Amino acid sequence: MSMEHSRIEYSVFTKMAPSVYAGLVAIGSAVKDSGLEQKLAELIKVRVSQINGCAFCIQYHLNIARQIGVEAVKLDLLAGWKDAGIFSAREQAALAWAECLTALTAQGAPDSVYEALQAQFTEKEVAYLTVAIGAINYWNRLGVGLRFSPPPAITGGHI
Image (cartoon, rainbow, N blue to C red):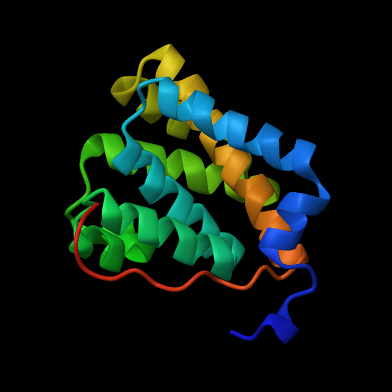
């Protein structure tokens, strides 16, 4: 993807709006510090970014997911997680919640999805998972709206 495609590059945005960038980074740090599993959080971020069509965030979070050892098969089948048969009940509940909150106008946040979430997560985990979903949706809107160019792909090995 060429820089000409971009409306405002990610690196330019972070310098142009440092307090916005710092605020979003702080939200991400709070989620990470909450104890929510990083591999689960990255699956959520990739899935939400797929739904929103944010090339920058898809590649950015695929890179992180690979670095922290998320199984390649889960990344490969993430878009079809409902039928893949390889995601845990906890992952499925989180992915269903992420999809609901990303497509609010289509379905809202049904009680049935929330109840499935409550069966797998503590109240604090639900709160931070919801924050993580909201934050990646915000980033997606920046990435799509400003057409951030995707970072280079990182393949193979771990950190």
